[in-house]
Amino acid sequence: MPLAGNGLPKFSPRPWPGFPVDGLPQIVALCCKLDGRILIQNWMYESGLEFCRELNMMGANIFICDPQRVIVSGPTSLKNSEVFPPDVIQAIMAIFLLSLSEKVTTIIHGTHFLLRRYPDIINIYQKLGAKIEVLEK
Image 1 (cartoon, rainbow, N blue to C red):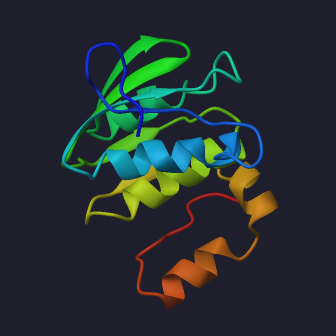
Image 2: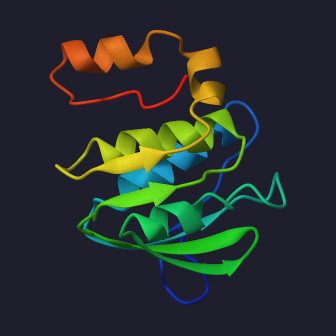
């Protein structure tokens, strides 16, 4: 893994055959649970890391350097929270997955974007044992 100028591991998406930019939000969520720090850069979309504010509201430790770079420090413990993510399906998915990683209550607004892309996601995770309650349709 390449290192940033300050010696931090650095991760960024690349065109095919590199890592796809659509998977970057899930990588950020995963890094919240890993031990250590990493610099994540989304050079493809100017506000592609905007959802990190919501992860911080959940208890994540993410330093937002600028709209395209964040430093994620982990592992972090989540707390009960209510979040209003941007209208980006993969960002909402990352928030959803991170909220399932601990026994906390997370109210996620705007899930209709996620359900439009993954209509059975609630049922699938409930069958796996997740405690999910839909408050609005």
